[in-house]
Amino acid sequence: MSSTTPTSFASSELENVKRLPIMISLIIGAFFSILNETLLNIAFPKLMVELNVTASTLQWLATSYMLIVGVLVPASALVMQWFTTRQMFLGAMTLFTVGTLISGIAPHFAILLIGRMIQAAGTGLLMPVLMNTILVLYPLEKRGTAMGTLGLVMMFAPAIGPTLSGLILESLHWRWLFFLVLPFAVFSIVFAFIYLKNVSEPTKPKIDIISVLLSTIGFGGFVYGFSGSEDGFTGIIVVSIIALILFVFRQMRLKEPLLDLRAFKYPMFAVTTVLLIVVMMTLFSTLSLLPFLFQGALGLTVFASGLLLLPGSFVNGLMSPVAGKLFDRFGPRVLVIPATGMVVIIMWFFMQVTMNTSKITFLVLHICLMFALSMIMMPAQTNGLNQLPPRYYPHGIAILNTLSQIAGAIGVAFFIGVMTAGQHRFLEQSSDPSSPAEISEGLVAGINNAFMYGFALACIAFVLALFIKRTQPPKE
Image (cartoon, rainbow, N blue to C red; front, side):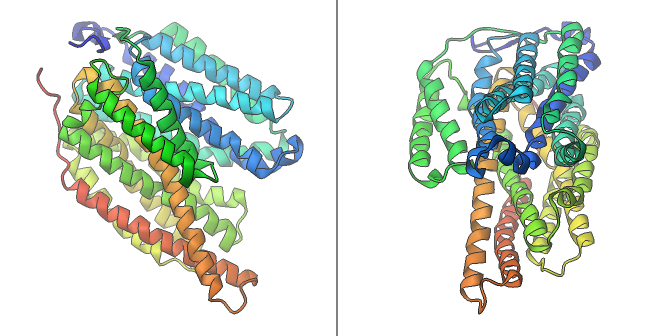
């Protein structure tokens, strides 16, 4: 076994480990760290007034969060080989808790931004250690259920974030968005300190500083360029692409790479990675376009838009554990192939929406979409990771999480760009482009154009799903 391999405890030792307290420890921390990603966005209008900053300045609270996560996730494979499970989790949750406290008491914008960045550092390290622990702790035939439980947390927390935030802000100051999270974060640390056990031993491989720098510039620049920079498609993107090319070449030459890209030699992991990128972009086409449609064309409030999307997100979260159990029993094909076909049909219906489409129709379509995605995301991801030898677990997790971040950043920028261009073309041909009714019609036309690309991506996902088959780890 390579020196870069995080040494798992022997199977006989793992059999004696109580899994439930470990999972509870990890899930409590993961829930509140992920919840915080969407909790603050709805408070932006109030923050602009209270902190006396512009919208473009305030956007850094969201952009910096994605940027820090985008930088840390690729390096998480290395970090997980340097620290134990307890050290990783307690360290990540401590960072998140400190960041939450700083954000809550921040006297001005700069301190709030620092607090958010510290929170993001904790979140960026937390999710990889949670997924790696599941892969090490659970045998192959039970991983689907465990990963499905993780899927519930990953979808349920961000789903209730905007709605919960709206309820809090109706009666309390925006600082309570942080203060209310704080005791749960502290409880997670205390609970984990008592019950969380180590499931792997650190091997402390050599750190290649050049790889770390190239990874930071490449992945960080890519996420920043697409998610928050006005110059995203010029200098920043070009520099990040060059850094990523150099990063890939360097990883293939190193004996102890920062991110071991040899994981791609396992075919189901490679297919799964491409499938998840396509599905993530399809998902973000919906997540980014529907709020514009609801608020810009249909005239709904932010809170009402959040309520309209809430049932679908609930369904996705609740179905994730069910999908995990079905995966353990039947394998990925019976879930992923019908679900991607369902996404194709749903995206076709989204292409047809108009100003007169009823709210019930949007509600049903969104519920069906989120149901289908619950049958794709965790089953496909678990199946791909199952084919990897244990020494590749940290690298496979880091690859999937990193590329999901990039797919999300590109997806939001691309689909909003297509929507905006379509609206401009419509208004150029309009006899009264300043009319509110024409502006709304133009927005719908732009959204229809964007969903057309979402439909094309869904078709690609369906074709990729046909190549999915159940995996077993190789004998080494």
